Length: 455
Image 1: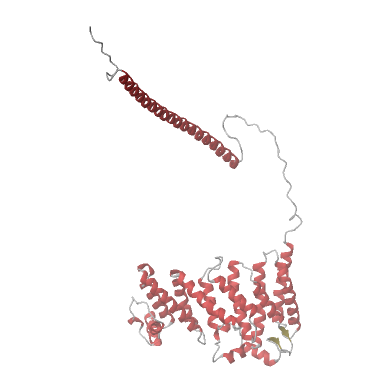
Image 2: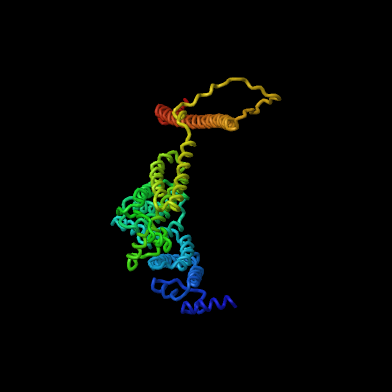
């Protein structure tokens, strides 16, 4: 009864009757039809509708279903992007859509990669204009990181996506604190890729180091991460708001842009951004500590972070923030020192290994059996056996070839002898005929027979 009441409440809230929908739903052919189909339903009901569409039209039924599902995949991805543009972000709706996108990606992987590469090309053009990614672009990048496998080398989607994000971090200028939030959110996405693939991305370290160098504590100088001296008004504002890096997805770039920029200019966000920078560098150090050059990579960054943590501890923010940053710096220094201590020595790297002297000591076998191989090296024994068998087969082949040559020679000799005999017989018959003609001519046409007359 409680479940029925909940369904009735959901139907009343949605404004449409979910029970009136058929179980077999055809694939929508346009974005407008899809929006009309799911409009007015709750996120759980939307998930159920998507499941019915996918189950009712599987790819295995025919090639037409594959084409229709490819169209539906593009529609669903466009709906995801449009939902990410809303403010506030409809998290429940996105959580209902993402699992279906994941399943459809596995059913039409080639088309999904093609669509992803097309969207990445749009992001690349945005990057070339010098603009940071919008909130829907950040959400799409995070979606692609969940859909595809980062462990596959030279992935057709994730590899160009990593290049686009790295160029954003390296070449795009930072104009506001919202740009800092977007850059740190890109770092968050790239960290997921690095944790699974262990690929070195120096653009992340360069961006984090530049963010750390822009921190100014107890200073009235202008700067995106300049922290003024802590006052009662600042302390009260810090208690009332807590702006994190991930909150960049909850502010759009249209009507709420001014409010969003003001929010990211707050002291609460600046402190969270500094702490996020420190923790990101610590996570990257834990990932890259197996590299031989890990100490040389992180020593300059650790010295910069140490200076910031010391100034933060001595400032008016030192009670909480300074202690956190100091703890992170200490763990980084310990990791760098461990990398240096565990580094293998280069003393014997360029030395040639000493060649072992070959020994000719005889080996005696008890209960020796002639023909049995007593070699303890299995590979060498097998190699000897194969070589012996190869010689035997070679000798057999040569013996067969000699037999064939003798047979062919005898046949050839027989044919030549027969040919000579035929020529000789023909010559003898012709010579015999000529002798008969000669004798006939001499005998006066009596074929050599002279008859004597009787007297």
